[in-house]
Amino acid sequence: MNNLKRINQRYKQFRSHPLTCKNPVAAFCRYLLFHIRSRFKQEQTISWIEGLKFYARKGDAGLVANIYYGLYEFEESIFLLHFMKEDDLFLDIGANLGHYSMLLSGLTKCRSIAVEPVPETFRQLRRNIKLNRLEQLIQPLNLGISHSENNLFFSTDRNTMDRIVSDSYANAVQVKVTTIDHLLRNEIPEAIKLDVEGYEYFALKGANKILRSEKLKVLIMELNRSGKRYGIDDEDIFKEIVELGFTPYAYNYNSRKLIVLDSYNKEKFNTLFIRDEEAVRNRVLRSRAIKIKKHEF
Image 1: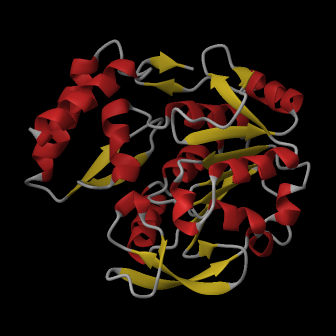
Image 2 (image 1 turned 90 degrees about the vertical axis):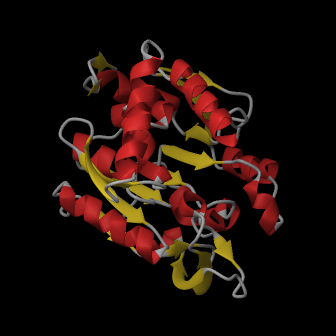
């Protein structure tokens, strides 16, 4: 019954996604085919968008959904593809297997710094970068991000949801952590994606200089109540971001319009925060169209 519920839920998701809503059956077939092949082949090499590729294994939640949907985390991914330009800098904190860094550096030719603390995940991230010959554009760093220089323990058994844990956690590894300000001592990114499984508050506390720079226009962050495990409420994080001059937005990828939100996105995990709407709007309106599975955005 659990498997049937999972399949039914996945099919409903296919019916609502922009790339699969018109043909959810085809997406479902890709879903089944990948899982069938995974029984016989531990790792598959998948062709993605505009010549990009990635290695996929069952359980690699950070990338395999792109097989079924074409482009997962669609709204934020398309927005960044419209926003980022060649010679820009993108900071990908919690890069996992490289979805955002590969996508942006591969298609826009911007430079990315991909920060991933879990050693095995980091190894797979580097393989994906090498597979796409993006070593000159993506700098992978096996680090964690916090409010100070330190060493912290990270879980190793939660896949895309690996997080900071206590030293008594059964499946954990000790990793060096640094601050965003220290990491970017001599440069400012145009955009930051921050996904650190509830530790966002502490990551932001170590980014005082970067967050106040007018050059930083975009912050994409996951607020899903997971900060509670560290004693942090999403509302407190949201308040601090707004005080820094950022406003929450939704993005209409068809019209390329920015839509102001009253609060952070509570219907899905990621929220798009923007500073200087006019500058960002001008960028996205001028960028080239992105082609994905016969669709153009």
